[in-house]
Image (cartoon, rainbow, N blue to C red; front, side, top):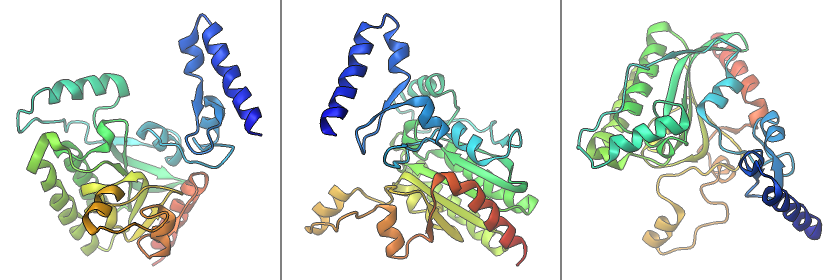
Length: 282
């Protein structure tokens, strides 16, 4: 089996070298970092961006996530008027943001809107790790807060798909303030008796984990997602102990009561719709 895999990799590499349009060929293939299999990208996309060989959940863009979750043509985006600011005049920050806008075709690390999920209306916020690793600056915090406030105003359930490397260092203390702002908005949301479902995806870390990601009435997670505040290496160096196997993975956190359920991406839309329906009956 190992020899077969090596042959397959060599065959693909040989085709890439021999093709004149090699960039096009490279763009059609993806390697699973779990089972090391070379996969045809279209097949992976058709399988909800899950490796058909081992079940590894690849990271998703916000656009692809929304397409998977929201009913067709039902997503109405909000918060597009909220743009990235540079409060600290951090050297090269806005240039980097503009370059990422061009590369990712999105304006910031989160897209928010109102949509229907199997006919059930909800406010949906989806973070995107392709934009500065989903880091939370003032724009992300303000858009998340707007989504929460829209949920309150329209009396709709709120769903946030989290993926983040934490606070955005280029905005310093302004970035850290978003933790308090989003948490305060969710406290009002809770007082209104509205449903908030937090979905943790790979990776959810730093200030996002320490704020709105952990405040859901129901907390779901995708399989094998990295979830935590600080990284394992930092924790080990701090406590001077070896961490347990699988520490900070969603399966470990489910076992220890941090999350409520691990949901395969192929089932996520139906699970969310059912949870909304159940809450409506309460």
